[in-house]
Amino acid sequence: MGQGFFGYNPPDFVLNAAKDALNRVECNQYSPTKGRPRLKKAIADAYSPFFDYELDSDKNVTITTGANEGMLSAFMGFIEQGDEVIVFEPFFDQYISNIEMPGGKVVYVPLHPPKDGATKTTSAGDWTLDMKELEAAVTDRTRMIVINSPHNPVGKVFSKDELQAIGDLCVKHNIIILSDEVYDRLYYVPFTRIGNLSPEIAKLTLTVGSGGKNFYATGWRVGYLIGPEHLIKYVSAAHTRICFSSVSPLQEATAVAFEQADAHDFWNQSKKEMQAKVKRFCEVFDELGMPYSDPEGGYFVLANLAKVKLPEDYEFPPHVASRPRDFKLSWFLIKEMGIAAIPPTEFFTEKNAHLVEDWLRFAVCKNDDILDTAKERLRGLKKYIH
Image (cartoon, rainbow, N blue to C red; front, side):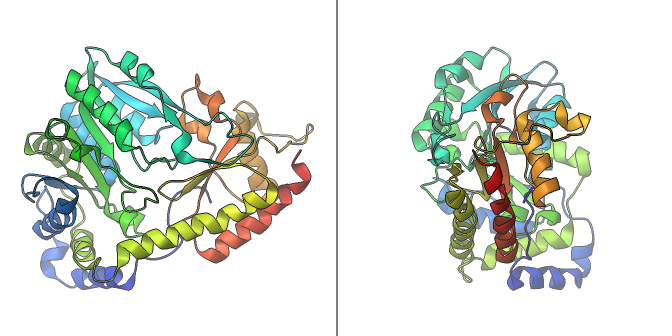
């Protein structure tokens, strides 16, 4: 229940597309550095309805080796020594090294957990951004801001009003917006794309997507960025120098996946199935009286284990004993319950780690029998709850 990889295969129409691609000579050779034309067109066709303009597959889309490499390409394309990039805590840990590699400085602004999150189940939307804190973080060196919606690990879908406020601030200070939307098909409340709020905000926005997240194939490493030509061209240029081109047969298969997804009602089914997995897994927390943050999107659940009292004489290895309480909870669950979860203080700076030291992140993108086994093992916590 730790890392967010799927416990099951992509649907047959996606797997068959990959098998077919492997039999074609051109799909086993280099692809154009900006991506295979068929995939760029499929993405432009799939995403144009979400934006107020028709996406040009040659100018507004570039393919990358996973969303992570796409974000690295964006940072490499725009960040120079001493430039500042604002990141919200908790953050996906890869952001930090990707920003620092070209010489950028990370400036952190925390999302604040719900005040009653330790005593009752709340919505992931109750994790709040203080706009005054964000405004105070902006300096004349601020070059970019990273947004993640639906959010990992919180599961928050930023509201239209929140995104409008962030977008207006970026327009005021001419700050590039890197919007990490890799869970963009898994939303359970209304979902707003910041790049579609206004023409002024759109000119500053790069939207990041993931074929792997969309089609249950995280190992395929097929990502993409969408945005205006004056931004996309620098991402493509950096990508060319980082890895030249991305895996050809899996690009072709992802193109077919986008082309055929609607005919298979895939988007509606995947959302419905994932939401059912969230509900299925969280039943055990309701049963134990253990609060959790009900996700608005994605496939992660943050549970609050403040009620769990660890044995006072329990021995933790030094590398765990020196870390916050969530690391100890995570270690205890692995050793005593046989279930792995991620300690979310790893997604915070040391200054703000105290905000989440009673929480753990669980990934529910697993088969139902695994979820049921995990629930049964978590019931072993009953004797430690006070």
